[in-house]
Image (cartoon, rainbow over all chains, first blue to last red; front, side, top):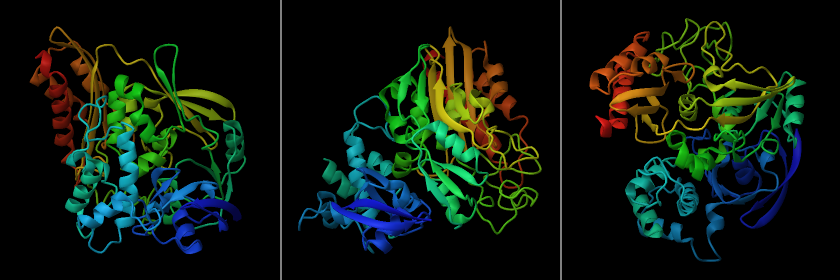
Amino acid sequence: MDTTITLHVDGEERVLTVDTRTTLLDALRDRLGSTSPKKGCDHGQCGACTVLLDERRVLSCLSLAVAHDGARVTTAAGLAARDELHPVARAVLDHDGLQCGYCTPGQVCSAVGMLAEAGAGWPSHATEDLTAAVELDDAEIRERMSGNLCRCGAYANIVAAIREVSG
Amino acid sequence: MRPFDYERPARASEAVAAVAADPGARFLAGGTNLVDHLKLGVSAPTALVDVRDALDDTVQALGDGGVRIGAGVPNSDLAAHPEIRRRYPVLSAALLAGASGQLRNMATTGGNLLQRTRCVYFQDVTTPCNKREPGSGCSALEGHGRDNAVLGASEFCVATHPSDMAVALCALEARVRVLGPDGERTVPLDHFHRLPGAAPERDTVLSHGDLVTAVELPPPPEAARTAYRKVRERASYAFALVSVAAVVRVRGGRFVDAHIAFGGLAHAPWRARRAEEALRGRPVTEEAFRVAADTELAGARPGRDNAFKVPLAVNTLASVLRELTEEVR
């Protein structure tokens, strides 16, 4: 069944007709040419497809496009302001937080969403006192980023990059 | 993937009517499990009825001191909710032990309860599975059995329920509010998920068209100490081998009462009533922890690959009880 939807992708309004079976990830990549979110596992296990959906980090591979008519989608590419990289993307580069780079856009979107969650005082599994203020130490960053896999194993530098931006 | 219609009604009653009228229709909320099942071919609905506009997504205080959690509340918002963190920390802890930040942002309270087993054979349509295809057989009985249930399983199904949240809700004696074609009803969480028996295709007591609208919690027992402990094969982002939710009260060096539930051991969150009974009124001692845990696991029937779950469950419960009573021993 075809349905016409509107997505606001990285600040641009895009109208498209999708089959109801189309995931948000496939709509972004194959229909709109927004290839910053990556298809890794396509089953919600790797985090490479992470985008910000109305400012919350989500997995676009497990989202049906038709269920997000009217949504604001921000990809890692859209986080950059004009020619300036987003501070999280800049830090990932500065700290060599990547090797092949395939997981990087998902890592960056996830980190941006995660920093907002921590800023709002959300606890994590690594938080000892659930009612205390959040302090983003390495254990917190690792736990909060555990939904983003990096098969090159750049984790140590990804943590360092996020620590720099959060501090 | 089979083509399907999509609709997004504004009211829960409309959503229930839409699904009830179409045997091939399914509710869609966060989609974290269902969309994966569409891709895997585990589920092939003819219509999806999106309930995110229809469901309450707020946490409200109840007159009796408890809370009502709308079925549309995302897992992340529920875990971070100030009242849940302060009064029901075992629920926050359980939610935060599950999935990843992205998935918790998508998944809903109702959907978390209704997520299906991660048994590898259930998710692999090339293999027999009585839960996916009744009568086809159970591949897990003879196959990869590390994750299999050790309590309450049957010759037809040895799957485990994957939720962390539901384990905490079980120990908190939550109630599930359900809207069906014939009206509303309340199901105690302890009776919401089924044991497999001869009908493992049914995870819960719900019928087609029944929609979970809310979860209600009674007021937390006064002066109770609570914990959620999850044991898994890596530090984060993995399902439980064994988990324990415990709500215990101690006075004068004795257990007043304890509410205990296990995850990872059974087709449903496992309320450990035998262990609770063994603790009631008993002095807080290492022996009491052991006896309680051993009593609960006495009925365990492990298979070839999952015998480790029995001592793991015993030790985990004993460890949780030790931690919760440290100050009073």
